[in-house]
Image 1 (tube, rainbow, N blue to C red):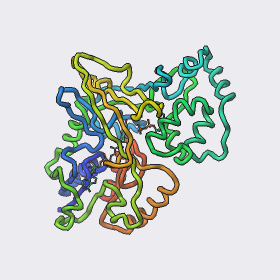
Image 2: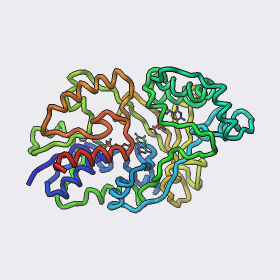
Image 3: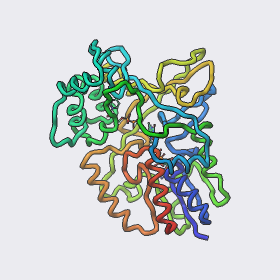
Length: 365
Ligand code: FAD
Ligand code: UDP
């Protein structure tokens, strides 16, 4: 029987573990954390509120294949994320839409009027290389300064001009009144939570899960035919070319008893960098649909130190990653998959897609 060791029990590791286990291999899954599900992990806090421990996780995808895949392990709760941004003490829809502009400037423009308005304020840029270029070219300087500049500086510790265009390009601009954060066909969360879905995903007789185990502490003792590594790629190679920058977050939760809801949407963003050190406040109850007399809110403080949560998309980091990727390609008995190992700003569905593709390659399908 072929033996796999999988490092990381997040989406990347768990999906591959399941696929190879179903194909008849034996799999040992290690995670240095004391729980499965990686950054998608949810749990009941001490007050009984189901919270997303590592920030809001809203599943969204256009891939029916990926929805059907996960459906084997969970039922769904339909959920479309809506977000407000707090600007000058008032809440506005973000992504910027018709209501954002009308409410902010006291206007009453229809869709065509919004298109003309944006045409009059946008600052065309050619080429569009950075996040600053993307935003200035689509909504102009005032909206850039109010909604993007402070948020981006806090989130990344960089100027928008130092970040690749792909970062700010995640957030669209709408001329209509659509205030959904995502436009994907499928938008949902696991009905019983992510941890429950992962328990089902990893529940297979060929899979053994060892938690609280750091791969680097035990690697000399491990015996396997193939290793799947979903941690930091630079760490795997002893940071031989220097460390790849990842951005971290600190989460501060507060329970509010006898308060069914604290805010109108699951997320409220705080782009103002002078008055707020956090970027956003999450109220998980909106996402989970839980009924509870109280609520728990979580403030997100970006940080340069701590667990790695985000790769930082900019050309010099991509160049450094490519050096590691070249080493990775020479390792015939190791597969590198996931947000940290591929240094990609992946959403959950993209990680699952990458993991399924890697499993297909491993199994010669
Ligand atoms: P991870 O979930 O990070 O799993 C990697 C695992 O490997 C971790 O559990 C880690 O402990 C373990 N590990 C690392 N190194 C070692 C080691 N040396 N030894 C043992 N174990 C190790 N995506 C969406 O689609 N929608 C969202 O709404 C969304 N919101 C997000 C909000 C935040 C704040 C963040 C940070 C991410 C969000 N994402 C969202 C992205 C989503 O979290 C990722 O796409 C997904 O979790 C990545 O899965 P992964 O398996 O690659 O990595
Ligand atoms: N962003 C911003 N203002 C906002 C929301 C997002 O400037 O109100 C920018 C910011 O640079 C952020 C990026 O858009 O890092 C991507 O936002 P997203 O909500 O996708 O971030 P994530 O949920 O992945 O942290």
